[in-house]
Image 1 (tube, rainbow, N blue to C red):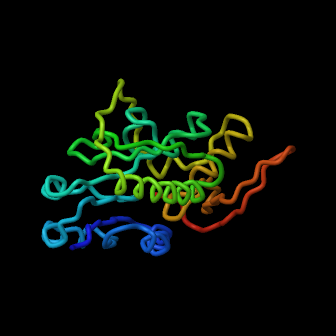
Image 2 (image 1 turned 90 degrees about the vertical axis):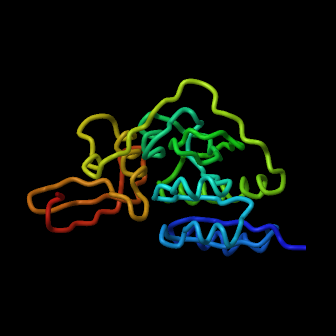
Length: 229
């Protein structure tokens, strides 16, 4: 009897490490894809996977692939609230302490597909901590999906749209309290993300690893020459 096949499409090294840790505990035969060049209609036709799961995937998936496989992605909001870009940063800016990680079927409309399940996600810590926490939770949800094969249900309610942030918006805010400043630094503190910064003359000063104290805030600082463009 042929094993059921599954595909995991993900970027970032922590997702690869997590895949290697968890794949032996999951049923079926698995294949890992880390770039859009690898994700081709030919691969889908050859594998014929039951599901294709997407974690932190940065590219649009072609309609030809979405029509050929049941594709599942994970969005860090309680959909239809928070459709769109930069969900983590938008949530923290709005004062959310927790959110729901939504597993949804991918469609031509971004973040609008039907929902398989949702699980609560804690938003404390640095952005990097939250992303890795979300990946661990997503793997638990993947296991539930492949074991139970739930029928996805259409999203209910009026959508709230999030706008993708631009690099210039990483500039430190000039108003608000220390907690506002702390949240701004931590929500941008992740690999491959524009860190919180200020510019002073020819210097760019970036802030990471912030800690909010009773009487102030401490953070790690990196100074480079050359202003942002």
